[in-house]
Length: 345
Image 1 (tube, rainbow, N blue to C red):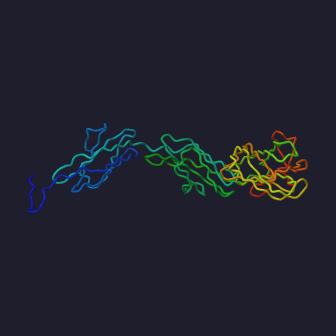
Image 2: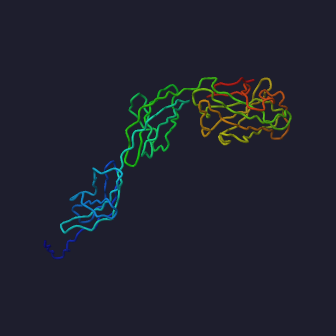
Image 3: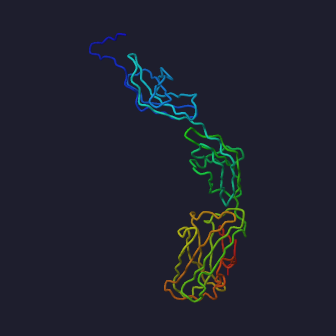
């Protein structure tokens, strides 16, 4: 073919090779895209099954800057180059890009939903090939479902901030680079406030000297019910006499829950053996008490700012005979402001 040159014109040339070629794997397919080459009227997409070729055309005359190659074998790596074409001819091949198609993961199996206090804990069996999971929730059985968590890497998830007494319906899907599976089977949960009597406070006297300058009650909270409890909903009170007017200090020397997850405050009390109480409350980081679970050791220590001595002998919550943990009703526990364990003075 001969090409004329107009006066003042330029000699037509083949276009430059396409750049920025990418190959994105899908389910039995690969999506190829690239940046347009100036002067190109179409593109040829070429494929090889070995790195570096040889390449064979899989599409010619492509007028856009993308092409989806379908009918591929999942698990096989394919190598692609693209050339640009115009009336003059065909460019050199682009740089190579590769993709390994894979199938969608199977829907998760074995989904369960366990109700707690204003929450539901979900668990499921891992799906082969999944890189993450999406948790979905509905207010009616069968959906429609809305995402409540995406990119979940584990095979469990706790959905918090729920309304007690309301039934929630859940499904989970599995995700990988190819896409998202179908939804799992449905599971449901109806969060409830734990009934009174399911929480127990255990106490032991870590210091059995009644007349020194520190009070050292150690505490353990047990959940003997069938419903998980948010520790952030719990407050525990230990009653004592201040034996003077000095201000009080308190420390958590050690706690299985983590001392930074426990706040300590003082309040006034009235009754035999008590003109004050120390109250423990818990941050959200303290987590939950699972059914039949316990908080573990909470080592509380108190002293007056002037380090003067106490006389604990008549303190309401003090019992020097308890040198090992035992249920103790003279330490009270409140759940969402309601007394559910013990008797106040």
